[in-house]
Length: 328
Image (cartoon, rainbow, N blue to C red; front, side, top):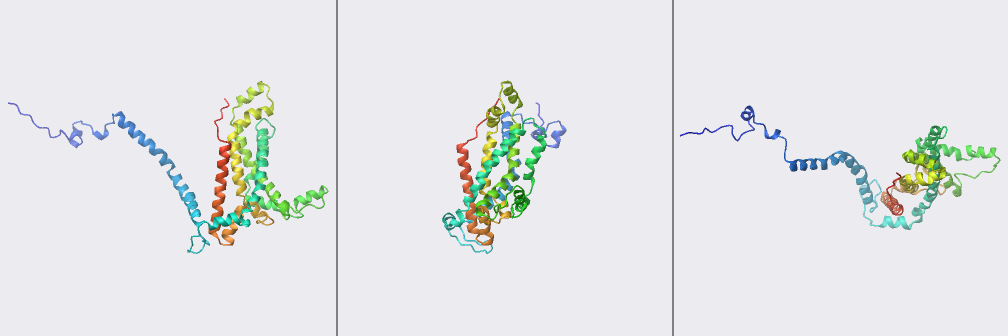
């Protein structure tokens, strides 16, 4: 009769005795089940984007979406910005914005900057196209065109304030050319907005120029070589190669032009402080909030401005949608 001795280490491979006998730890054994391994990799790949973007999303929600939500809430109250008391007034602030001419008429001032932005886009596109070809001193001209954008907006305002003031630099130059009675560039309500819009064009043409130049230089050079072999001139190269290749940047420039013309602030605030019919919607909003302590009404104006920019952008995207451009 034979007897079988029970092994005390059997069934406990994770113990120290099992390791002494050479039995591997199950946790150290690689998972050889393909389905479990794929599931683990899939879960890990789902979490990775959230881990990378979590900090950015937190900052975006904290400093953008929560303040916007607070602003929308203030727009339905009569809060003065200082006291803790705020009364719910419903849509009264929005009705006042759309019915009081003092508030909605300032949108007409934005038309000057909106038209000027098209001039700005045309100038920037022209120079970007010219300087994308082999031109002497093109790096120097690139720096000259981009330099105004590097200046602070307040500094630009003061420079052009001295330029346009009576007896200033512009009047002196015109006097040398024989113009004895120049207009009041900033004092005449019929001319002041043209002067301010031209200042805005001078400052922001460099930014639009860089956007166009980068887009043009991203077009493969083989296309230009093939076009030259086929006998295409510069205008035909621009029409059939450059314009389709930078279509998205042109669309982006129009969106920036619309939003920028509606939110002009620095230049008219520094040069005229909104006087002589040069007050923009943003200047009016700030004066309403801080000079007259009507934060609720100013919040409603800001919400209206935000809604207009979003609507105009949506319309522009519907009219000129993004399309895949394939030049190869």
